Image 1 (cartoon, rainbow, N blue to C red):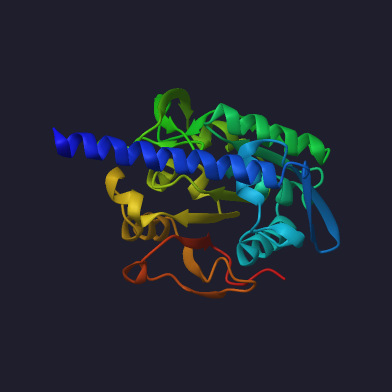
Image 2 (cartoon, rainbow, N blue to C red):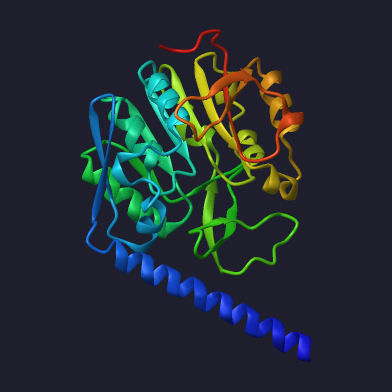
Length: 283
């Protein structure tokens, strides 16, 4: 009984500390309702009026600093050669807005399963006057309802092996990326960031993966992939089985990253890979 009470008190104290930090953070940056970044002389703005956006942006991206600069710059270079873009796990819309800004006239679809994040994402799309389509769905291996936890992290899948994480459970409709994008014409770019469910997304891309003109940027989350019965090695096997060369952006959060052959045995943390059939890095 004493141990249980002690654990309860400890959790309550931790929650109070988190609440206080969140309140202090929101108060400190209360006057900052938008933030902007400049990439290749093009200005892109983001709404920071809500508490989540303030936590995401400040203080790490003050003074115009770029999120995941090496990945962002590669995405921009790929976008210049693309006719359509799909952002799977769009969050508040960093890649949606950046890529769409360099893809005028192209088709842009952003997929986010958390309805609260979809609202932020739509605000950012509208703020930049972009023609991007926001979908409140989960991209999965098939059409089924998906459950996820929402809390401070604003949403993640519940692992298939079960979860003891705190949060509120919500349901959202699942769809495959093939359903949305198979009819798209021309070269495509897909970014996937789904916190462990990478294989689930790829499993619903059977048609798209056969196309010769598709580039994929996939952030691997090895700590979560195990709970989905997947692994970086399995991802590599599937992509190579479809004829893709798979490269790693080593140092994805640095200003520039080394682009090297992907070796799953070397993965120790979140890792960004680029899968392509092209032999050249776009200029």
